Length: 184
Image 1 (cartoon, rainbow, N blue to C red):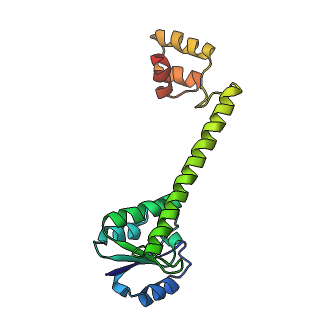
Image 2 (cartoon, rainbow, N blue to C red):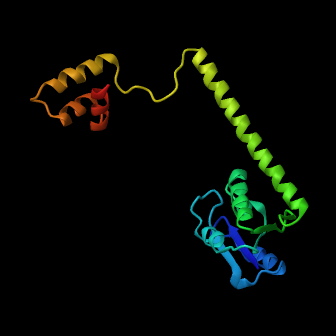
C-alpha cells in the first residue's frame, strides 16, 4: 500500500500541492499523514505515526526528500530502518524510488556521502584539538575556582559555624560545585 507523508515548515504554508501530488502517485487521502512543523524539529508526531504504521510491502511516498529527514544522516537512518522492515520509499520531486536499482544506488551514494562528511568533521575536530594542545590550550570547561579560592573553600568547610549555603554565597558557587571541589 502507498502511504503518504506531507510536511510544511510553518503554519502559514499550505499542504495542498504536496497532497495533490501524493494522491496522483496513488496514495489515498485517508492514508496521508499531514504535518506543519519545522524539519529541524526532532519531535514530529505525524512522522512518528507514519513510520510506526508502515508495514512490510508498504511504500512511503513523499514530495521531496527534505520533507522527511532533519539531516542527511537522519534521512538515511529513516530509510535504512524502513528497508530493514521491508518498506520502500518514493520521493516524487527527487525521482527516487528505493524499489528500483537506481533508487538503491542513489541511497547508497547518499549514505557514502554522509559517512564521508562525518569522517571529515572528525578529522577537522581532531586536527583543531591537536593544534590547540600544541599551543598549550586545554579543552573542557574552565575552572570556576583558582587554587587560592579552593584553599579558602577547604578552610571554610572546616569551620562548623558556617553553613554550606553561606560558603557558596561567599564564593559565588552552587552547592554542587562546592561538593565537587571538596571531593577533589
